[in-house]
Image 1 (tube, one colour):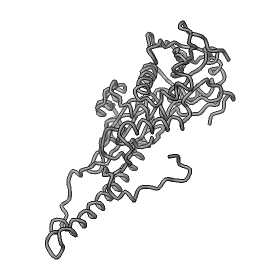
Image 2 (image 1 turned 120 degrees about the vertical axis):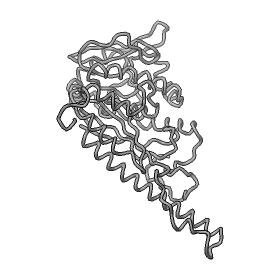
Image 3 (image 1 turned 120 degrees about the horizontal axis):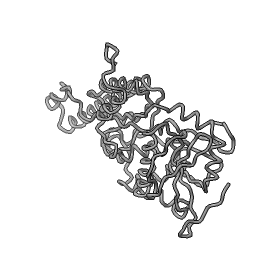
Image 4 (image 1 turned 90 degrees about the vertical axis):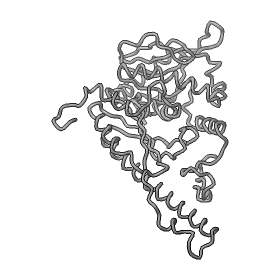
Length: 98
Length: 273
């Protein structure tokens, strides 16, 4: 809202302004953003389903396979230099699947 | 529970469920997975949107193999998304998890009967609201690098070049750790401010650079369900954030995928976990 209380845009145009700021045309939605939502979002119905990939573990295993096939299996270093202080990488937690 | 019905080519078919919406005018000529026509299955004021899929592709075993195939996953994901987007543009929509397949319409109607109240509640929560995604990355090169007195004078004095190199490398690492910490703190603040504007918020795992297509580390991968009247405030928060530590990226509007992630036990009515 502007100081006078008058909307700067019509309500339905605000979203367009936001979307324009994001510089991502709808048809070019990145697959990775989509998969964030499709694999972790949406209603999961259990109980009487015929088949489903709601089984998260199955999805994770598959995505790991995908990741591995995309570009090797080098570890993920948040600072962008895989060889830097590799000894500081978080040890695998107990119960975490490899 | 109905039996799987054989299709014209003899293979049994299943029903792929995309989303549930309130009763209304369903979009026409909507195509879903494998280009099949999406049709409404109405029941008790709700509509399930489904299309036929061959079980020789969507059965449990074929699925297990197909999920290793990125191209297959992308085709299904984009088809699913296209249907959900179209429905969400027309009204309140509760997307269902990717690849949820039923044996027939009777089973889907049965589902809408038993979970009517759960779906009604989810739909009223997301009605009129949109999901926005905000990703923040560690900015690799600070906009205004501070000249370091120690490094510029490093090679003078008693230090030999090897020692100077090691020390500079250590300082550089420490600098990058400071940068990382500062960016992470800024990302926490960004998330908190966005969450105040939003009706609900959620953080997804940071994306791996191999998939994000950016080499910078992601420090925030947030989703925010926002009332239209407050979208301008969301934009204002975002406008104040790109700085020497963070690159900020907005995606959306999305159908409310991140805010319908609820497990419904179909065998027990009205139980939301």
